[in-house]
Length: 330
Image (cartoon, rainbow, N blue to C red):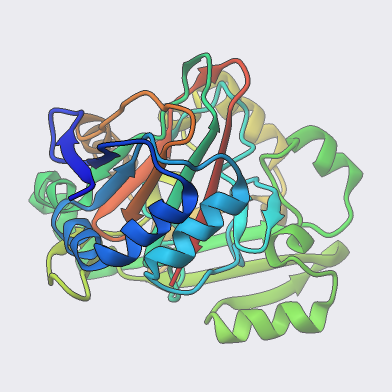
């Protein structure tokens, strides 16, 4: 074969794929086509692939790789609330959250019915320090969650609640990129289009005062992988509860002040019956995610492909300029 494979972490995630010789983009796309089944099977086995030292130099090259792998069609980031910018069709910045904010492990859009099957990351500019796109094996995380906690989540299910503003200079100023407007979330200013998108994505929605929108989704806490049938811890409850462990005390207190009015709170999470989730349960989940976090430094031109069910991802804090692009397919 024209490529070699290895691992660069203590875990078998990701599987690293490198060319044996320098390649042009056309040669790389031919390689992807020729060995497509190998890459698909490896993704199901390991959960993630890292293409390193291949000729990926731009968002267009990145898009070409995704199309050639042919794992699914591009999905727009509809309903997602991570702050990010659209670069070209299907390609976004990975997140515009402040560098000082750690984003814990999660499966992308696990709080919606039509979640992406795969997620992709391309390193255009590696950070000066840290800034890894952290990853974790969701199968192992499922096994490591305390059974009592896991059973409570499984038996009760989850309800996610979000609130988004329309035109609100105060929220844009005070929350910066951390709280998006519904025009950003749905990529439209048309209320009818928002209602249509909510319907096809099974979002419960209501318009509230001052043109805010309230969304809620009821979802299971675990799922089975559609092909491998592995049990997966598949939820984002820990990201929807703004607590001191997640935010740190100062940011937590500031958040309590900004979101003193209930209809403006960015996130809330409950069990599906509306009861509160014990904070100690959420803290246990966060500790388990930290214990299962895998990190490796980005190299310019790297492309990581993750099965969005088998593998979780997040982002470490960083310093210096960083530009990581992302895309999703269904």
